[in-house]
Amino acid sequence: MLLQIRRYAILLALAFAAWVASSPAAFAVDTRGNVAGRAQHHPQTARFPDQPGNQYAVLGEIEWYFEAESGDAFTLKPYARAELHDGGDTFFDIREAVYLTFGDDWELRAGISKVFWGVTESVHLVDIINQTDFREDIDGEEKLGQPMVQGTLLRDWGTFSVFVLPYFRERVLPDRTDRPGFGLDVDEDAARFESSDAEKHIDGALRYTQTFDDIDLGLSYFNGTAREPRLIPDTNGTALVPFYPLLEQYGVDAQYTTEGWLWKLEAIYREDDIESYGAGAGGFEYTFVGLFETAQDLGVIGEYLYDERGRTATTPFQDDVLIGLRWVLNDEQSTEALFGVITDLDGGGKAVNLEASRRLGESYKLNLDARLFVDTRGDPQLDAFGRDDFVRVELAYYF
Image 1 (spheres, rainbow, N blue to C red):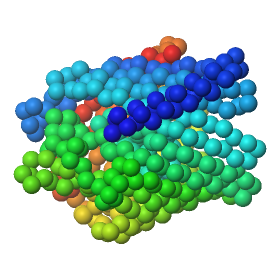
Image 2 (image 1 turned 90 degrees about the vertical axis):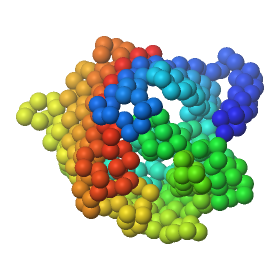
Image 3 (image 1 turned 60 degrees about the vertical axis):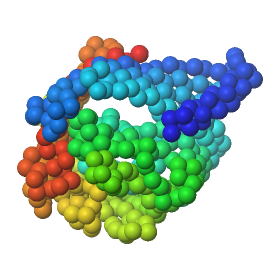
Image 4 (image 1 turned 30 degrees about the vertical axis):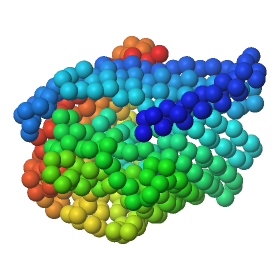
């Protein structure tokens, strides 16, 4: 899979080199990036003796942005992560290698790119274009670059995009020595696909967005290989084998803004050869601006998560409530923190999450993440992480 992505990147790089060579003096170049050191501590004893109590990594990302006099642009963004603890490995990805051209009311992007859909804080149900890098973080926020061609019309009646996705990328999943993990090895080399074209199946998607007064609305349709695999035990019961079915997904996301309130909704309907189901997440965020007559803001978040599959769902969030706080100091150091608790209304298990960050000087940023899993025995999905509480500290240098 990585070899295939590199081939795409090489072809794009050659095309880009020819583009630049045609008029090298007509390009503006912007370079930025970051490199970070990360330490992650697990206070609980691991399920297995070969799982680490502490994990360490060095990671970095660099972005080159080339813009022609015409406005056409090319973005190249490679990413690399090296794990330094025993049993750790290295990972490389092309997050973006995309060419952009446009007219008065249209845009065309081609290459490897990232697209985000969604509005809710707890989950992003409609977000299906890019694959998840699950070894980077279990919150599903980190995504792999996706080969695509995206055409967009920008009209008064809304923005309409068509996506052609010529190559599928498998999910990056933790193995048994990783924490958090599933407790079994994941045999990604044995991955199976419903389509006989496997990862070369051509997927497609449509998306329409428009703003109606205070309402931002998004409608989407996807047809192709599921980004989330079903994990099936192998014949020996010692490893999990990913299976990727074909599916159709219809999605809607909406946000209503009024004074200090944000009302949010995401809902999907998915259908494949095995099952059809609906899922949704919705709620609010209310912000107290200028808390106690200071520059600080405090947001209160409440969301409900639903999946009609119930306990057979592939996600632990099928009848859950999120209560959270977002604290923004609005200071020179851009200090902010997000705290949330997702509670399973059926089993009572809780996922507690803290994300905080603060700039240090001109070029450094300190990030703190903590995740706790409480009373998980009543929720088999969440119990897989029951002994993988962790605190992670990351110091990044930006240039």
